[in-house]
Length: 339
Image 1 (tube, rainbow, N blue to C red):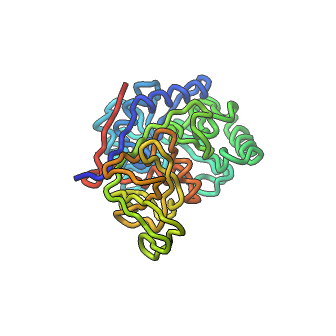
Image 2: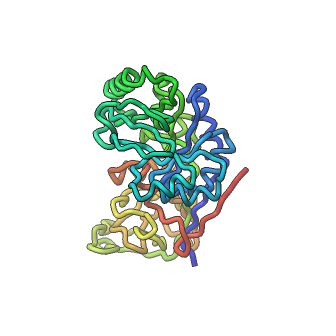
Image 3: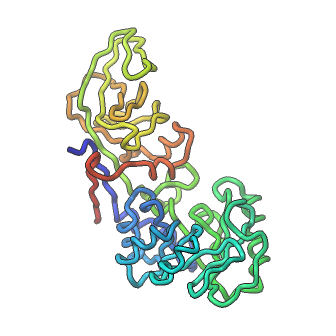
Protein backbone atom coordinates (compact mmCIF):
# COMPACT_ATOMS: atom_id res chain seq x y z
CA UNK A 1 0.00 0.00 0.00
CA UNK A 2 1.22 3.55 -0.67
CA UNK A 3 2.69 5.26 2.37
CA UNK A 4 2.32 8.84 1.22
CA UNK A 5 0.22 10.92 -1.13
CA UNK A 6 1.45 13.37 -3.77
CA UNK A 7 -1.22 15.73 -5.08
CA UNK A 8 -0.65 17.79 -8.22
CA UNK A 9 -2.79 20.93 -8.40
CA UNK A 10 -3.43 21.42 -12.11
CA UNK A 11 -5.21 24.71 -11.44
CA UNK A 12 -1.98 26.04 -9.93
CA UNK A 13 -0.03 25.11 -13.06
CA UNK A 14 -2.67 26.82 -15.17
CA UNK A 15 -2.47 29.91 -12.95
CA UNK A 16 1.34 29.99 -13.13
CA UNK A 17 1.25 29.73 -16.92
CA UNK A 18 -0.95 32.83 -17.04
CA UNK A 19 1.38 34.69 -14.68
CA UNK A 20 4.31 33.85 -16.96
CA UNK A 21 2.36 34.88 -20.05
CA UNK A 22 1.73 38.27 -18.46
CA UNK A 23 5.42 38.58 -17.56
CA UNK A 24 6.38 37.64 -21.13
CA UNK A 25 4.82 40.87 -22.41
CA UNK A 26 3.50 39.47 -25.66
CA UNK A 27 6.20 36.87 -26.25
CA UNK A 28 5.13 33.26 -26.72
CA UNK A 29 5.25 30.98 -23.70
CA UNK A 30 6.96 27.64 -24.29
CA UNK A 31 6.30 25.24 -21.41
CA UNK A 32 9.34 23.21 -20.33
CA UNK A 33 8.09 19.78 -19.27
CA UNK A 34 11.35 17.82 -19.26
CA UNK A 35 12.17 15.34 -16.47
CA UNK A 36 8.51 14.31 -16.33
CA UNK A 37 7.44 17.90 -15.81
CA UNK A 38 10.01 18.43 -13.03
CA UNK A 39 8.41 15.51 -11.21
CA UNK A 40 4.85 16.81 -11.65
CA UNK A 41 3.88 14.66 -14.65
CA UNK A 42 4.82 15.85 -18.13
CA UNK A 43 1.54 14.96 -19.83
CA UNK A 44 -0.66 16.62 -17.24
CA UNK A 45 1.53 19.72 -16.98
CA UNK A 46 1.73 20.06 -20.75
CA UNK A 47 -2.03 19.79 -21.16
CA UNK A 48 -2.92 22.52 -18.69
CA UNK A 49 -0.08 24.79 -19.84
CA UNK A 50 -1.36 24.58 -23.41
CA UNK A 51 -4.90 25.23 -22.18
CA UNK A 52 -3.62 28.36 -20.41
CA UNK A 53 -1.98 29.74 -23.55
CA UNK A 54 1.42 28.11 -23.95
CA UNK A 55 2.16 27.63 -27.65
CA UNK A 56 4.89 24.96 -27.52
CA UNK A 57 6.36 22.27 -25.29
CA UNK A 58 10.07 21.88 -24.53
CA UNK A 59 11.83 18.71 -23.41
CA UNK A 60 15.43 17.60 -22.99
CA UNK A 61 15.56 14.49 -25.16
CA UNK A 62 14.05 12.99 -28.27
CA UNK A 63 12.82 10.12 -26.10
CA UNK A 64 10.83 12.49 -23.90
CA UNK A 65 9.34 14.13 -26.98
CA UNK A 66 8.30 10.82 -28.52
CA UNK A 67 6.32 9.99 -25.38
CA UNK A 68 4.46 13.30 -25.59
CA UNK A 69 3.80 13.30 -29.34
CA UNK A 70 0.82 10.87 -29.28
CA UNK A 71 -0.75 12.92 -26.49
CA UNK A 72 -0.33 16.22 -28.33
CA UNK A 73 -0.36 15.45 -32.05
CA UNK A 74 -0.80 19.07 -33.14
CA UNK A 75 1.55 20.82 -30.71
CA UNK A 76 5.05 22.11 -31.34
CA UNK A 77 7.58 20.06 -29.38
CA UNK A 78 11.14 21.36 -29.14
CA UNK A 79 14.00 19.12 -27.99
CA UNK A 80 16.40 21.41 -26.13
CA UNK A 81 19.19 18.89 -25.58
CA UNK A 82 21.51 17.39 -28.16
CA UNK A 83 20.08 14.76 -30.50
CA UNK A 84 22.29 12.01 -31.88
CA UNK A 85 22.40 11.36 -35.62
CA UNK A 86 20.57 8.08 -35.06
CA UNK A 87 17.67 9.97 -33.43
CA UNK A 88 17.09 12.44 -36.27
CA UNK A 89 14.90 10.12 -38.41
CA UNK A 90 12.57 9.48 -35.48
CA UNK A 91 12.47 13.20 -34.70
CA UNK A 92 11.66 13.95 -38.34
CA UNK A 93 8.86 11.39 -38.41
CA UNK A 94 7.42 12.78 -35.17
CA UNK A 95 7.57 16.39 -36.44
CA UNK A 96 9.86 17.52 -33.64
CA UNK A 97 12.07 20.59 -33.60
CA UNK A 98 15.73 20.09 -32.71
CA UNK A 99 18.54 22.30 -31.40
CA UNK A 100 21.96 22.46 -33.06
CA UNK A 101 24.89 23.41 -30.84
CA UNK A 102 27.57 22.75 -33.45
CA UNK A 103 27.93 23.46 -37.16
CA UNK A 104 26.51 19.98 -37.88
CA UNK A 105 22.88 20.88 -38.53
CA UNK A 106 20.27 18.12 -38.97
CA UNK A 107 18.56 18.24 -42.33
CA UNK A 108 14.86 18.18 -43.23
CA UNK A 109 13.78 18.96 -39.66
CA UNK A 110 13.13 22.37 -38.05
CA UNK A 111 16.23 23.49 -36.15
CA UNK A 112 17.07 26.16 -33.59
CA UNK A 113 20.70 27.30 -33.62
CA UNK A 114 22.09 27.69 -30.11
CA UNK A 115 24.73 30.31 -29.35
CA UNK A 116 26.82 29.97 -26.20
CA UNK A 117 26.80 33.46 -24.71
CA UNK A 118 28.42 32.50 -21.42
CA UNK A 119 26.86 29.32 -20.09
CA UNK A 120 29.92 27.38 -21.21
CA UNK A 121 27.94 24.29 -22.05
CA UNK A 122 26.01 23.46 -25.24
CA UNK A 123 26.20 26.04 -27.99
CA UNK A 124 28.18 27.55 -30.84
CA UNK A 125 31.06 29.84 -29.95
CA UNK A 126 30.09 32.01 -32.92
CA UNK A 127 26.75 32.02 -34.69
CA UNK A 128 26.83 30.42 -38.13
CA UNK A 129 24.80 31.70 -41.07
CA UNK A 130 21.26 30.36 -40.63
CA UNK A 131 20.40 28.22 -43.62
CA UNK A 132 17.31 26.42 -44.83
CA UNK A 133 15.39 24.75 -42.05
CA UNK A 134 16.53 27.11 -39.30
CA UNK A 135 13.45 28.36 -37.48
CA UNK A 136 14.95 29.88 -34.34
CA UNK A 137 18.03 31.31 -32.64
CA UNK A 138 18.56 30.70 -28.96
CA UNK A 139 20.89 30.89 -25.98
CA UNK A 140 20.71 30.08 -22.29
CA UNK A 141 21.30 32.28 -19.25
CA UNK A 142 23.78 31.04 -16.67
CA UNK A 143 22.71 33.08 -13.65
CA UNK A 144 19.56 35.08 -14.33
CA UNK A 145 18.47 34.24 -10.79
CA UNK A 146 21.44 35.94 -9.13
CA UNK A 147 23.88 37.91 -11.31
CA UNK A 148 22.39 40.89 -13.13
CA UNK A 149 25.63 42.14 -14.67
CA UNK A 150 26.54 38.78 -16.22
CA UNK A 151 22.97 38.23 -17.40
CA UNK A 152 22.93 41.60 -19.13
CA UNK A 153 26.26 40.81 -20.81
CA UNK A 154 24.85 37.55 -22.12
CA UNK A 155 21.73 39.30 -23.40
CA UNK A 156 23.78 41.99 -25.19
CA UNK A 157 25.93 39.38 -26.88
CA UNK A 158 22.89 37.44 -28.02
CA UNK A 159 21.11 40.53 -29.34
CA UNK A 160 24.22 41.71 -31.20
CA UNK A 161 24.87 38.30 -32.76
CA UNK A 162 21.26 37.74 -33.83
CA UNK A 163 20.39 41.29 -34.95
CA UNK A 164 20.84 40.48 -38.67
CA UNK A 165 18.34 37.63 -38.35
CA UNK A 166 15.50 39.27 -36.46
CA UNK A 167 13.05 37.57 -38.81
CA UNK A 168 13.77 34.29 -37.04
CA UNK A 169 12.29 33.46 -33.65
CA UNK A 170 14.77 34.51 -30.96
CA UNK A 171 14.57 33.06 -27.45
CA UNK A 172 16.85 33.15 -24.42
CA UNK A 173 14.69 33.77 -21.32
CA UNK A 174 14.14 31.08 -18.71
CA UNK A 175 11.78 31.41 -15.73
CA UNK A 176 14.06 33.78 -13.80
CA UNK A 177 14.67 36.04 -16.79
CA UNK A 178 10.98 36.09 -17.72
CA UNK A 179 10.13 37.34 -14.24
CA UNK A 180 13.01 39.83 -13.87
CA UNK A 181 14.30 40.93 -17.29
CA UNK A 182 11.59 42.32 -19.60
CA UNK A 183 14.18 43.07 -22.30
CA UNK A 184 15.04 39.36 -22.50
CA UNK A 185 11.59 38.05 -23.37
CA UNK A 186 12.06 38.69 -27.13
CA UNK A 187 9.88 36.37 -29.27
CA UNK A 188 9.44 33.44 -26.88
CA UNK A 189 10.27 32.46 -23.31
CA UNK A 190 11.11 28.94 -22.13
CA UNK A 191 9.70 28.51 -18.63
CA UNK A 192 10.03 25.40 -16.51
CA UNK A 193 10.45 25.73 -12.75
CA UNK A 194 8.10 28.70 -12.29
CA UNK A 195 5.38 26.86 -14.20
CA UNK A 196 5.18 24.48 -11.24
CA UNK A 197 5.08 27.23 -8.65
CA UNK A 198 8.65 26.82 -7.45
CA UNK A 199 10.71 29.99 -7.17
CA UNK A 200 13.72 30.19 -9.50
CA UNK A 201 15.21 32.54 -6.90
CA UNK A 202 14.93 30.14 -3.97
CA UNK A 203 12.50 32.36 -2.09
CA UNK A 204 8.76 32.33 -1.58
CA UNK A 205 7.03 31.72 -4.93
CA UNK A 206 4.16 33.94 -3.81
CA UNK A 207 6.50 36.92 -4.14
CA UNK A 208 6.11 36.51 -7.92
CA UNK A 209 2.44 35.56 -7.84
CA UNK A 210 3.16 31.84 -8.29
CA UNK A 211 1.24 28.98 -6.66
CA UNK A 212 3.02 25.72 -5.72
CA UNK A 213 1.46 22.85 -7.64
CA UNK A 214 2.83 19.91 -5.66
CA UNK A 215 1.67 18.74 -2.25
CA UNK A 216 3.09 15.78 -0.29
CA UNK A 217 1.33 14.20 2.67
CA UNK A 218 1.91 11.24 4.95
CA UNK A 219 1.12 10.31 8.54
CA UNK A 220 2.69 9.29 11.82
CA UNK A 221 2.90 5.49 11.97
CA UNK A 222 4.74 5.08 15.27
CA UNK A 223 5.31 7.27 18.32
CA UNK A 224 8.24 6.72 20.68
CA UNK A 225 9.37 8.41 23.87
CA UNK A 226 13.11 8.88 24.22
CA UNK A 227 14.73 9.29 27.61
CA UNK A 228 17.79 11.55 27.88
CA UNK A 229 20.72 9.77 26.26
CA UNK A 230 18.58 7.65 23.94
CA UNK A 231 18.75 8.16 20.19
CA UNK A 232 16.99 7.24 16.99
CA UNK A 233 18.14 5.99 13.61
CA UNK A 234 21.40 4.95 12.00
CA UNK A 235 24.57 6.28 13.56
CA UNK A 236 22.73 7.75 16.56
CA UNK A 237 23.08 11.17 14.96
CA UNK A 238 20.21 12.37 17.17
CA UNK A 239 20.45 11.70 20.90
CA UNK A 240 17.82 13.22 23.18
CA UNK A 241 19.14 15.69 25.75
CA UNK A 242 15.78 15.71 27.56
CA UNK A 243 12.64 13.56 27.49
CA UNK A 244 11.54 13.72 23.83
CA UNK A 245 8.62 12.42 21.82
CA UNK A 246 9.43 11.41 18.26
CA UNK A 247 7.16 10.25 15.44
CA UNK A 248 8.15 7.99 12.59
CA UNK A 249 7.05 8.55 9.00
CA UNK A 250 6.89 5.58 6.58
CA UNK A 251 9.06 7.07 3.84
CA UNK A 252 12.63 8.05 3.22
CA UNK A 253 15.23 8.70 0.58
CA UNK A 254 13.75 6.01 -1.68
CA UNK A 255 10.73 8.31 -1.91
CA UNK A 256 12.84 11.41 -2.49
CA UNK A 257 13.10 12.62 1.10
CA UNK A 258 16.84 13.13 1.00
CA UNK A 259 19.34 12.36 3.73
CA UNK A 260 20.54 15.97 3.71
CA UNK A 261 17.04 17.21 4.55
CA UNK A 262 17.56 16.34 8.21
CA UNK A 263 16.79 19.55 10.12
CA UNK A 264 14.02 20.72 7.83
CA UNK A 265 10.48 21.31 9.09
CA UNK A 266 7.26 19.47 8.33
CA UNK A 267 3.73 19.98 9.65
CA UNK A 268 2.48 17.43 12.14
CA UNK A 269 -1.18 18.26 12.31
CA UNK A 270 -0.91 22.05 12.40
CA UNK A 271 2.42 22.22 14.25
CA UNK A 272 5.80 22.72 12.62
CA UNK A 273 8.20 20.04 13.76
CA UNK A 274 11.83 19.28 12.92
CA UNK A 275 13.18 16.22 11.15
CA UNK A 276 15.89 14.64 13.33
CA UNK A 277 18.39 11.83 13.05
CA UNK A 278 19.53 10.11 9.89
CA UNK A 279 16.97 9.84 7.09
CA UNK A 280 16.70 6.17 6.16
CA UNK A 281 15.60 4.58 2.92
CA UNK A 282 12.14 3.90 4.37
CA UNK A 283 11.84 5.92 7.59
CA UNK A 284 12.10 9.48 8.82
CA UNK A 285 11.98 10.65 12.44
CA UNK A 286 10.34 13.91 13.45
CA UNK A 287 10.75 15.57 16.85
CA UNK A 288 7.26 16.18 18.23
CA UNK A 289 6.11 18.99 20.48
CA UNK A 290 4.31 16.38 22.59
CA UNK A 291 2.66 13.03 22.35
CA UNK A 292 0.39 12.60 19.31
CA UNK A 293 -1.79 9.80 18.03
CA UNK A 294 -0.67 7.31 15.42
CA UNK A 295 -2.34 8.38 12.17
CA UNK A 296 -1.81 12.10 12.78
CA UNK A 297 -1.46 13.71 9.33
CA UNK A 298 1.92 15.08 8.29
CA UNK A 299 2.44 17.61 5.51
CA UNK A 300 5.90 17.36 3.94
CA UNK A 301 5.20 19.93 1.20
CA UNK A 302 2.17 22.21 1.27
CA UNK A 303 0.26 24.51 3.64
CA UNK A 304 3.23 26.87 3.78
CA UNK A 305 5.91 24.17 3.94
CA UNK A 306 7.85 25.00 0.79
CA UNK A 307 10.16 22.97 -1.40
CA UNK A 308 12.43 26.01 -1.28
CA UNK A 309 12.80 25.60 2.51
CA UNK A 310 13.81 21.96 2.15
CA UNK A 311 16.28 22.95 -0.57
CA UNK A 312 17.95 25.51 1.67
CA UNK A 313 18.42 22.93 4.43
CA UNK A 314 19.81 20.44 1.90
CA UNK A 315 22.11 23.02 0.34
CA UNK A 316 20.55 22.60 -3.09
CA UNK A 317 17.79 24.10 -5.25
CA UNK A 318 14.09 23.44 -5.47
CA UNK A 319 14.54 21.91 -8.93
CA UNK A 320 16.52 19.00 -7.51
CA UNK A 321 14.07 18.33 -4.68
CA UNK A 322 11.09 18.26 -7.08
CA UNK A 323 12.80 16.12 -9.72
CA UNK A 324 14.00 13.68 -7.08
CA UNK A 325 10.57 12.87 -5.65
CA UNK A 326 9.29 9.38 -6.36
CA UNK A 327 5.71 10.16 -7.38
CA UNK A 328 4.96 6.71 -8.81
CA UNK A 329 3.18 3.75 -7.23
CA UNK A 330 3.50 1.54 -5.30
CA UNK A 331 5.48 3.69 -2.84
CA UNK A 332 3.21 6.68 -3.27
CA UNK A 333 -0.29 7.40 -4.45
CA UNK A 334 -0.52 10.26 -6.93
CA UNK A 335 -3.67 12.30 -7.38
CA UNK A 336 -4.62 15.20 -9.59
CA UNK A 337 -6.70 18.13 -8.41
CA UNK A 338 -8.29 20.71 -10.67
CA UNK A 339 -10.62 23.52 -9.76
